[in-house]
Length: 402
Image (cartoon, rainbow, N blue to C red):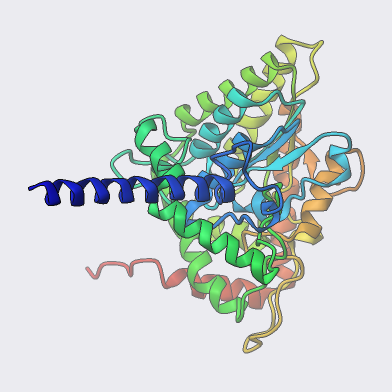
């Protein structure tokens, strides 16, 4: 019996030692940036990546580990396209908090987390086309990526979450990956400010667009058509963001993000009665106008609309059969490169001609211009319109035989 007790004691001490070593190693490497300690390695910062499986956790880790005067929120369009080192942020330490597939519901959660820990002077919020006129996500469905494991989910068990961050196997695996990257001298795909470096153009861009991206567009259009109106829940989230920025005396700039013209034409082809997104635009313009009228002495809330037929958004597709060429400055129909992102940030800094500032009184002219630009593209590139129609037909049910 004494031998058994000695063995049990030895085993428990060994287990405790392993846990302590794991804790020290994980907090030194701090791969997700959620466990900042005095001994956490600063030299490893450029090797800490924002892996897709831990996207929400790692972006929240940036908030937890840094001091940020400015922040950009949005989907992967922000993650890929908007550089926090742009000169519009001159003198401000800016972080890119764009989330892969992250729409307003998750961006609202990220914004709240950011505001709890930081004192911003500038907030840039990017809204994707159709988000405001699509229903809130089904609470019963599993959230994408790692939201439930991240600091953003208020329903998560904080003790369990912190144990995972400090001594969990998943964190340990990420720590080894980070150290291995440092040994090889391979910097992470994201900068320490959360901006994805050099996103690659896909092979056979036409095929990817005709499958993944137009199927996603089709599902979005169907959700909008079924919902048929603004999501009041999402508008309430926007009002809270406006109120919190006002309270913090932070400048708020809202982007209505760009998409390639073929994405925009798809909604017309699918029979969406609001195919030029007038409801979304009007909601954003009215929101800003009401807030500015209520507090005219504060920095005005700006809404910039980049969803149109501007030449930057309207390059023609590569020729059929060409699997190596790609749309200039577009990874697909959704994701613009940092070259276009620079034009967006230039615009709010007072330069360039890309995009237009939205006001309630300017909505009719804006919609008319967008419609004319899209029709001009369809007339100029009829083969692209045929490609769009053929691609969308794959996702539509054939009519029932009588």
